Length: 389
Image: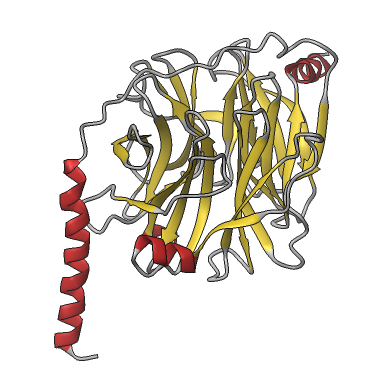
């Protein structure tokens, strides 16, 4: 390839990125709003303890699946998304979508492909080498959001974020829209954990940056009145090279707690708080909970306590445990071991609480299945009593 051709290709690339950066400021200023804290279900801790497990994804037959997310639909059913293919980062990786059956919540529909690299390339009008990390969440009415990662060149540090919206709870989907989050190259933005709804409309979606630094951010995002155009802006939670994949919970309109995957030598879960609805965050501190540079996920319980799903190890991902705190994260009690199998991998937990008070947890099970665990707060209280006894 001669120098003139290289220069032309470089100029085209710069113009394409500059065009996106020039268009970005034309969207209205999207200001953060106060958090919406879900009302506690009166059934949350009532009744007998309940816990059961099933698998959302079928056996992939020698291929892998990874990074599941789950949400509740307006009719009370659940929907889930994950990616799968030959291996992580392979060109045959696709993003899958499934819903459970109204008649039997433990049964799931056969997964269908929502995004793969060919369709993403066509919709985004640019070459896409691979896709991954889908996050699924419900908006107003029958709106369903899918935020996912695409990569054109390199690995995860060369990623960009994209959004797809369905207006009929996942039966059909609009085209992918690329989110321009940086005026320079617009790369190295990833997503992992669920968003928080905000009163100004839209969501506070935790994202993170992973190139020339590792740091967490908040993407403030909403759709326009007709539901097609997307408005967004991002704010940084903290800088440095230590914390990624924030999991953010709200314990009040202005109060929030973030937990971070940690990349320091201390190998502990990171934590920060906000008292102004995410506009600013405290400096992160390391908790007395181990973290083997692996994803975590947090949830607010109906009594104000915190529930954390994590790999309880500084070395690997061979277990999946639940821990509870009732003093805003200062002290923790391990209440349950969901997996503990040396030589195997359990990772990327993701939790929601549905309107009936049940808690749903999904995670990657041995890179072969997406496992679904559902339990009530009476079961959590039973585990706390057994631990303290």
